[in-house]
Length: 320
Ligand code: MTE
Image 1 (spheres, protein in one colour):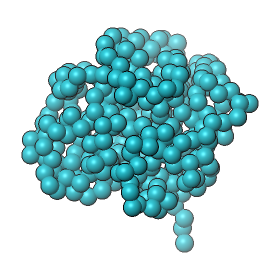
Image 2 (cartoon, helix red, strand yellow):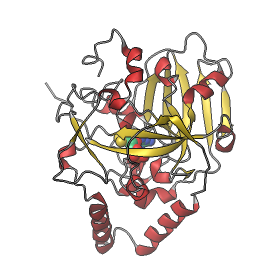
Image 3 (cartoon, protein in one colour):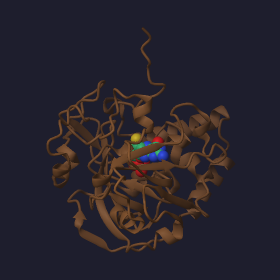
Image 4 (spheres, protein in one colour):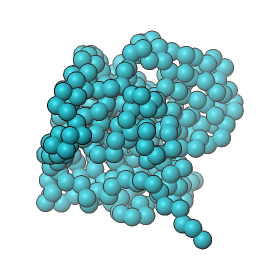
């Protein structure tokens, strides 16, 4: 019998160096020397990313402000997972400048009474923006605490009026090989698709996110609009979303299709359920915890116990 191995999977936390910035710069110099990247292409990418940044004022919401020390902006914007631009942590920063985020439309359809096609600027006015300091725990074993800007996804859900058949919400990211060099590879079955059960999507913590650190989202962080679902592993938080579809059946998500034994649909942060190839009991906070610091304990639901009632009666070892 053939055992189907994933074409690519996440890297365990044990292989992560806290000197990620040093590493990504080293990689950059290496690519430069190898001629894979020219100084001018880097400069124009960086410039494009820079010009896409806009100040975005949003009052902090104390009800959604974690006690954690915010991760440094430079770390949050240079150590990213965004496979549409490559699999190295430094790739999104280097290559996402090619993504054009205006004009940008988002289609909201499926099992809803009032489907919508919205321009990003109209979407941003749909509800008052607020700042929320959320932890984001990656399945690879690292975490950050980021002051995100956006509003509860439930605000959007209310506007489109889901039908009684709407049991799930599916999120699709842009997959344009002309703008996203990673989409030319077969690392994932593009487009990147993620999904939530509708009650999860309606939980006030689930954030439709358009900014961070007082400005609009950088391309590498998922501009112009992404999801942040802080109680689930980071891969549930889809970036650069173009479609939100309400469905009766559980969406087929990109990571689940690639490696179903490693990435379940729910993917709640759960220190008791190990990834098949590494433990999920501890994590390293990027920019704070050094290589020789004892790793911090990962908390159930990433420290958001208020979501527990969504899963009462479910065996979270089975529905990982
Ligand atoms: N969304 C898309 N479209 N493509 C991706 O590769 N990576 C996910 C998630 N969203 C990913 C994505 C993973 S694995 C993580 S940990 C988070 O984005 C990382 O978000 P950050 O880079 O802003 O910290």
